[in-house]
Length: 346
Image 1: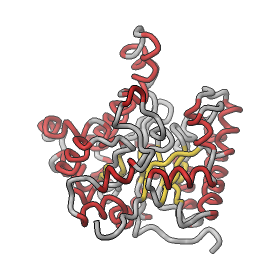
Image 2: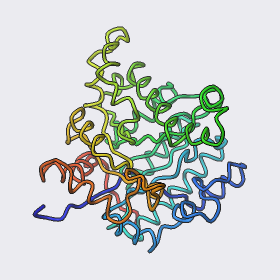
Image 3: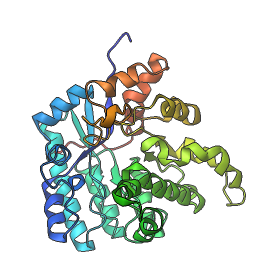
Image 4: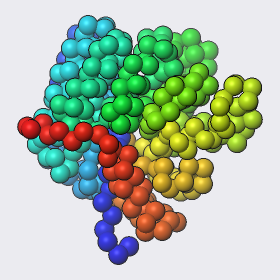
């Protein structure tokens, strides 16, 4: 390419002290993905200084849009979630302020309370200058299409900021029915191997079929992991659009209300398929750091963004220079252009 791509990663994960302490108080699972222990994942989640910047440089990422590790504050008691979300967002804002040239952040949202969720999004965008929020699908037994979320969705639409959704574990009956009885592999199968993506993908379909995007036609959602499975079935699932009472073809909702990123899975096939279905002008970039950093079991090639792979994967993609620049940073800048740009100090 004539000019070096500026790459913005939109799913780059942290565990800030307010959340880590809340997990301890709540007796949450003490696993590396929540920042517990001394494993590389846990340490990298907690680290937001020079080491993280060095790893970003190693990947070839210029800017990281930070967000809490799944499930954020969405499995905490309501009162705790409201307090911790505010504290976490203040801490995220401090990280961004330390290196505004390298960091942005998605707000944590206490979805347990409709009023507090909308108010915290308003504060995070208007006062802290955040470009959007990260949600984690289900809150308790309430899925993403539950009417309790309407106030939050209306606020996001009015502010002109996107909501990035990240999956979490399916409910226990699903885990018991589909992922039990096969030994230790059952846990990862229920989670980051495959179960996460079905769980959130079905919630996306529920949002569409329940009319969320008809009520909030300008609401913009970011889907990671190449569209959480459902993107690959649009040609088939779309057959049921009329039966589901949709006002327009199913694919139209994805092309008008969704943006898709790969979450660090460096698969040329997934990249080409997503571009064919969505168009390069609806694609974003992400590395899912630190979960895709420095791990290559048995030489597996597709889920390791270290050693410059995050950059070389996009630079070598079969797209024009203009399309690569769109995916690398311009689509994100266009998507967040409507958001207020109040500085933390201003």
